[in-house]
Amino acid sequence: MTYSFMSPPNAGRFVLSNATLPVVAVEGFTAPAKEGLVRADIVIEDGLFSAVLPAGSAPQELAKSDLREGMVWPCFADVHTHLDKGHIWGRSSNPDGTFMGALQAVGADREAHWSADDVRKRMEFSLRSAYAHGTSLIRTHLDAASPQHRISFDVFSEVRQSWRDKIALQAVALFPMDDMVDEAYFADLVAVVRNAGGLIGGVTKMGPNLAWQLDTLFHAAAENGLDVDLHVDETDDPGAETLKAIAEAVLRNRFAGTVTAGHCCSLARQDDGVAERTVELVAKAGISIISLPMCNAYLQDRYPNRTPRWRGVTLFKELAAAGVATAVASDNTRDPFYAYGDLDAVEVFREAVRILHLDHPLDTAARVVTTSPADIAGRHDLSRIGAGRPADLVLFSARGWSEFLSRPQSDRVVLRRGKVIDRSLPDYRELDSVVGA
Image (cartoon, rainbow, N blue to C red; front, top):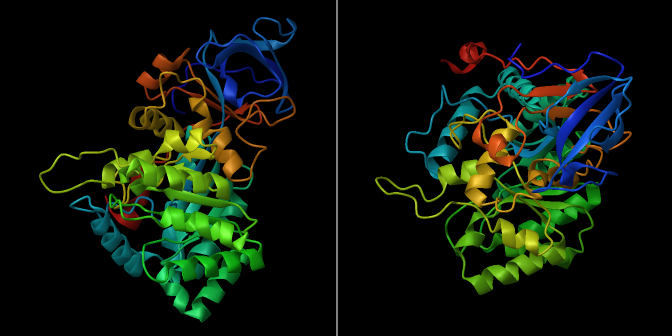
C-alpha cells in the first residue's frame, strides 16, 4: 500500500479526534473558525457519520485516532473530465502543445484505436487513480461523433455499473454541433444519451447557425428530460461570445433543466462592460460554470517562442460574486489536450488556488472540489461531512492551508464507509500494451 501518515481504528464505532475541517463542507456543526477551518471530533459508526462534536468532547470509551489537528475533507467531486481520452499521450502526443494540435491528434487517435476494449482499459486505469486519490464523483465527457457515440456509451454504462459502489459516474455526449444537420445521427445520439441516463453536450462556436443549434439542442433536451453540459469559448479570441448566446437561448427557450458550461476562457479577454453583461445573463439563466485551470493554462495563449501573456482561465471570481455556481475540475489527463495529470483533486485544488488566486482568504476555497461540483452534478448527498452521511473521507497530516498547499499530500489516508482503502496507484506499465511506453 501507499505510505500513509496514520491508521484509523479498525472498529465499527470510532472517533477521529482533534481534526481540522473545512467549514464549507461540514453540516450541522459550528465552532470558532480560522481561515475557514474548525477543530472537531468526528464519530463514525457502521460506516456513517454519527456526529461531529467539539474537539476533545467525544465519548472517552470509544476507540480513537488523534489526528493532532490534521485536516479531514469529504471525498472529492470532479465534474469535468475526459475518461475516454485519458492516457493516450504515449501513442498520440501533441508536439506543439496547441489546441489545434490536440484536436488533430485526438481525432486521428480516435479513428485508429478507440475500440470498446481500448476505451475500457484506459477508463478503468483513470478510475483506479481517481479512487486512490479520494474522489467519489466524476462526470466525464465522451467524444460522440458517429459511430464512437455508441461504442463509448456502451462501455461507459458497463463501467458505471461495475464502479457503482466506489465512484458515482455521469457521462456527457461531446459532439461537434455542426453535425446536428444530420437529423438521423442527432436523433440516434439523443436516444443513446437518454437510454444511458447521460447528459447532452457539445462544442459551441460562433457562426450563423449558432442560435438554431442551441434552440434545437435545448428542445431535444427538454423533450427527452436531459440536462446540458457544454464546452464553451475555449479560446483567447475576445470575439467568441457563445456563452452569452447560450444564456440567451436558455432564457428564450425557458429551459427547465440544468445547464453547465465549461472553460469560458474568452470571457476574460473581453472588455469589462461586455463581460459584465454576459455574467449577468449567465446568472439570470442559472448556468453553472466549470473552470479547468490546469488544462487552460497549458493550452491557451501558446505560440512558438513566445511566453504566454495571460492565464487562460475564465472570470471565476466575478461569476461567483454574481451568484453563479462555480467549480474547478481536472479536465484532460495525459492526452494531447493536457500532457500531465492523474485525476487527483488535491493537485487540481492546489493549482486552482495558484492560477485563479483563490487564496487570501482561503475561507471557502475547499468548496470548489467538494460541495460546489457535487451540487452542480445534482449529487447533494456527496462531498459533505454531516451526521447520517456516508463516512467517505480523505485524511491529511497537514494542519492548515500553508502545509496543505505546499506538499502533494501523498501520505493521505482515504476512508470509504469508514474503512481504509488501498491507495496503491496503478502502474503505467499496465497500459504499455494499449498505448505504448
